Structure formats: structure tokens, C-alpha cells
Amino acid sequence: MEYSTGLATRTTSAWLTKVPAITATFWVIKVLSTTVGETFADYLAVNVGLGPAVTDMVMMAVLAGALVLQFRTRQCTPWIYWACVVLVSIVGTQITDFFTDTLGVSLYVSTAVFSVILAIVFITWYRQEHTLAITSIDTPRREAFYWGAILTTFALGTAAGDLATEALSLGFRTGTIIFATLILVTWLAGRFGASLVATFWIAYVLTRPLGASLGDLLTQSKDFGGLDLGASVTSMLFFGVITILVVREQLLANRHGVAVKGEGPLGGSPGDYAWAGAAAAAIAIVGAGLSTLHNGTSNATAAQPADRSTVTVTQTDPSSGAKAPVTKVVHPTTRLGNLTSFAAIVADVQAKVAKNDLAGGKSRVKDLEVAWDDAEAGLKPRDSGKWHHLDDQIDEVLTALRAGHPAQADCAAKLATLDSTLNQFDGL
Image (tube, rainbow, N blue to C red; front, side, top):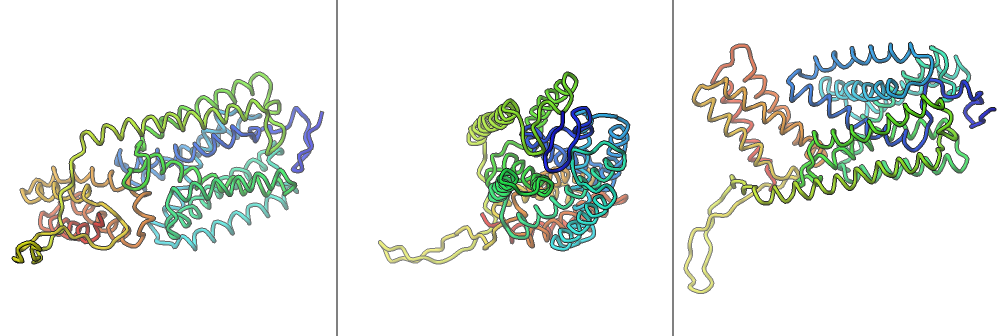
């Protein structure tokens, strides 16, 4: 029996030997793996304290090991394949972040560069193999081209997604709607006769920023427009759904092979749509429930932030005509929003440094680093310039306190500058 999909014609025994069937559950796992991968990398770099450089090296080494295992398999093994995808999502994101954050390369430039690299990969792949069909990943060379393209799509998706949500100030709510709509349009184009090769790879690129925007929507604070589930809860929820879907994929592959559950590169059986729909519904229901529970707890226990910017003006009492000084809270015009939580941590660090408790200050500033990293997706699109200005000053504070022999005066000066900027940019 043969399957003709427009990408390639393969016999049942060889069809999709190294890539899972491209069905509804494939796309659900792909989108969710983006958030899990990105969150885990941030956890290692910030929460564990490995830093970007060490995290990059560790993830690249783990990815290399996973790809060796993937290449050694002779047929599609879903759990190995999806482990590689998660790791590629991490490394692809790290590559883009290295260019943007470390080297200072513009998102416009990095998006263009990764687009060119992806085009080169496809051109070379086609000239060597005369097909870009994902249904023909059955030789080491074709698989090498495939994973090279996958890695580049993650880097490109990260750059293009950040460009849309940050440089163009779309935000993660708007980004989720836009990227989901673009994927739907791409799917419809494939159903109505567009090239299945082109529609697959376009959708694959778009799932990266969609997954990131969806993850940010769930994790970010309500002050920034999110549901405030937090990165840990969201990652556990997504990982649980991924595990269930991958176990199903593995069981089906063990029993029937990979061809039985799919009807083509953009198709899928009714059962697959049901599983994908159930996964999406579970995330929506659990997410909404946890958000409501978290919101109730926060409203019961939250303290009002201290007002830091005030001015005294003279007003006339309409009834008596007497003039009296009145103190009013003043906040500058800025789109960053409420920064009082960060200022509160800075004040704690300043108090410790003033007592020459530099070890305590170093320990407390970790909370600032984690909180700032967690809020990045909500703050950065609002005002990228001011966010980068604050980010640079926070880095200077971290460097001063984490020096081999920190100087009290230097730490105090860096903290004073940061506190002043937070007051200046606070837009509550």
C-alpha cells in the first residue's frame, strides 16, 4: 500500500520512519514543548544560578547526546524524538538570545539572518536529496538536514516572535491571537491546495512564537495582562499534557507503527483531533481554575504598595476659601506600569549593604533577578527602551554584589542609581 501526500510517496513500512505522523496531537505537543523548554532554560540560568553561558553549554551537550540517540534509532521512537524537540527549542532560543542580549544584534537583523540560513538549509537539502518531504526522513543525511532545519526554525521563530511582540509592541495577548490566526490560515491554505512542504514549515516556525506567547499569557502577573499562574505551575501543567500525549504516541507506534495514526502530513484521524481537543480543554479549564484560586488568595493577602513619588501643592478649600498644602502622589508617564515590587527588593538590598552585610545583599538580590526575569515578557513589550535601561542597571548591581571582593561603596552607588531609575520609570 502507498500513500501519496504531495511531499513524497512511500510504502507503509517505510513511511515516516524517523518523524511522527503530522496530526493534531503533533502540533499540540510542538506548541507546548516550546514553553516547557524555554522555562526550563530560564530556571537553570536564573533560579539555579548557572548563568546564561553555563546553561548554554549544558543544554548543547545534552542536545548532542539526545541527537546521537535519535540518529542511532532505525525508526520513529516518539519519546526520543520529542525529547530532542524540547532540547532543540531550548538551544534555538538560546542562540537567538545570545545574539540579541549578549552581542546586541537587532531583532530585525537576527530575523533576516536566520531567514537566510533557513533558506540555505532548504536549498542545500533539496539539491542533495531532491525532496524536502518530512515523509522521507529515512537516511542519516536526510535526518541531519531535517534537524538542521528544525534548529534554525526555532531560532528564527524566537527572533521573529520577539520582534513582533517586543519591537512592534504587540504584547503576548495580541501575539497569541495573531500567531494562532496565522497558523489557522496556513492550515487552511494546505487544505485548499497550497504546497504541503511550504505550509508545514511555515506552521513549524509560527508555533515557536505562539507557544511562547501562550506560555507568557498563563505565567505573567495580572498587572501585565496575564493569568498569573507562574512559570512552575504552567510548566508542570504543560509537561503533564505532553507526557500523556507522548505516551499515547509511543503506545500506538509500538503496536501499529507510525503510519496508522495519520492520514498525511497535515491530516489526522478523528481520534487524534479528539485527543488534541481534550488536551486544549484540560489546559483551559485547569488554567482558569488555578487562576481564579490564585486571584482569590492574592486579593485576601496582598498589601498595598507604598507610594514613592509625591509632590506638595497648594489648593483652595471651596467652602471656606482658605488655602492649604496638599500632598499628592505623582507618577511619571511610562508604559512599564507598577514597579513597586522591584523597588521594595532594591530597598531591602540597600539596607543590607548600608550595614555592610554584603553577603546578605548578595542573597537578597537573587530575588530581584528572578522577579525581573519572570516579568520580562510582560514588561519588555510595553517599553523596550526603558526595560533595557533597567535591565542593564540590574546587571550592574548583580555584578557588583557578586564580585570576588565586592566593595560596599560600589554596591551602594549601583543600587542608588537603580532605585532612582525605578522611581523615575514607575508608571502606576
